[in-house]
Amino acid sequence: MSNHYHLVLHIDTERAESWDADEVIKRWTALFPANGKLIETLRLNATSKVALKELDQRVELWRERLQDISWFMRCLNETIARQANREDECTGRFWEGRFKSQALLDEKALVTCMAYVDLNPVRAGVTDTLEGSDFTSIQERLIDHARKIRKRSYRQQRLLHRRNVQHLVNKPSQRRDSLLSLENAQGIESRVLPISQRSYIALLEETCRALHVNKVETARAEQILDARQDSLSALGISSHAWLESVRKFHRFYGQAAGTEDSLSRFQRHRINAGVELKHEQKWVRGIPPSRRLYGT
Image (cartoon, rainbow, N blue to C red; front, side, top):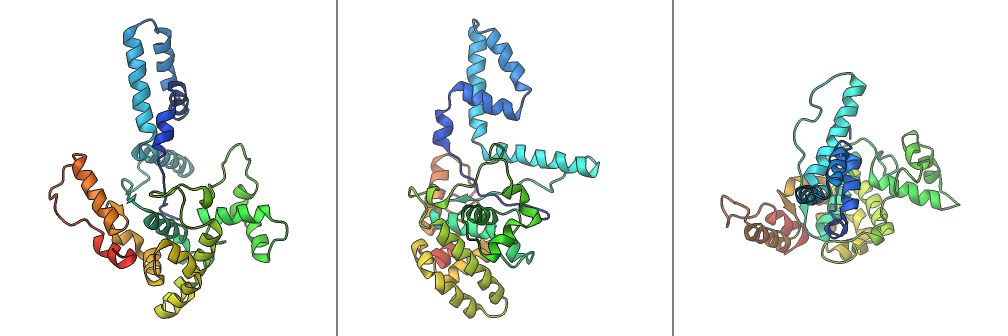
């Protein structure tokens, strides 16, 4: 968007813990090259127990930071801020404040949040279609699909010729990876998401229509979504709840989003982990909306 962006992130802890020391050092020094000199110095003194201990401690510290969302956002936002300052020939802060994050606790919350993010330009009135939603994951998925088929529709041809998507259409494979297909995306509670990529795209197309109609007639908007009731049923979400979620997802929850059971387990996990809470038995923010959206 013009003044902010949204990301849906997954931390692959199991993969990060499987990296050996060389892999951790390679990844960290790619972000912070100056630390390469420290590694060279420590390895030159490999006969010293102090140096080896320091090296091991550094590797574990960097391993932890490489799977930390706060460090990821720090690196990303700093890069964007520096680029913007160079373009505007100025100095100082670029972002108004620290980023905000919510834990997505189950598949319902994950798919709903993905749709909320993908539909942001449509909801804001920047565009009326998914194809016109520049710099979104859903647009990139549509481009990947259009590039793989021979007999393209008019909409697909027009999409591939949009000026703002040429960095995706003509992208060098060695510089940018394609998005992971939803069929291969790992869920939270199950191994795969309960919706295919084709069904997800079709659901978002119907949701686009419903969002426009919803401005004047809510009942008609829900009737449009009933055409994709098979996808919504697989997610366990009603048409009304889905429409409300993709419009106001960010308003319903605090630190986490999900069903009532997921939110309760999240609260118990925080207490068991030793997180200091002012009122441990206080209601968890988001439970009333989760009951309305996803049921109990």
